[in-house]
Length: 126
Image 1 (tube, rainbow, N blue to C red):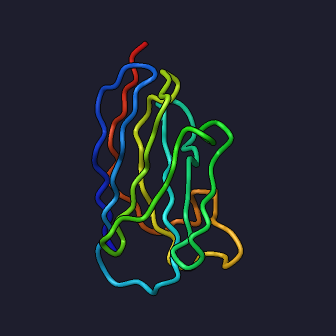
Image 2 (cartoon, rainbow, N blue to C red):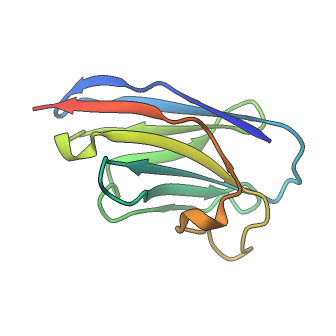
C-alpha cells in the first residue's frame, strides 16, 4: 500500500487549506486513515482519523471544530479540510493507513498505522 499526501503550502493565519491523501494498493474495506503532523523537535501528533467501515471520525482537541476529515469520491482518497489556521498548525502533515483498525474507534497513536505517505508541508504565517 502506498500513500501520497498533497496540498500543503503557505497560508495566512485565519485561512483555509485542504490536504489530500490518495492511497493505492490492496486492502480490505476495513481500514482507517489518519492524519498526523510533526514539528521539528517534537513527536508526531495525531490530528484526525476516520474509519472506512463506520465512517466515524476523530480529532485531536487542538483541531476539533477547525479541521474536518472526509472521504473523496474515489476509493481510498481522503481529505483534510483545515480552516481558521494558526501559526501553531505549521508542520509537516502525513497521512497514514491502519489496515486492521479497532472496529470501535480509530487509533490515535502512530505505531498503529502501518503505511505512511511522504508528508506535505503546511506553513501558516502570522
